[in-house]
Image (cartoon, rainbow, N blue to C red):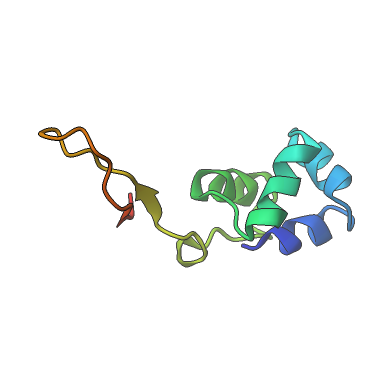
Length: 83
């Protein structure tokens, strides 16, 4: 699901969506700004909406993790990983 789908389902505003989900408006705002909802929250929303909104793992970008070269202590480029 996309953030816009959640907002529309709960009445068209981030405040209404947050209230319907029992979350802060800033949480919904961050989803809208980032353009995706974390997968765990998607599954929570799927349950709370009795399946009207469906979780979609393909809409969640892979997480990027920085690695540290233990020998030099320097950081390397982020590594994409899907958990």
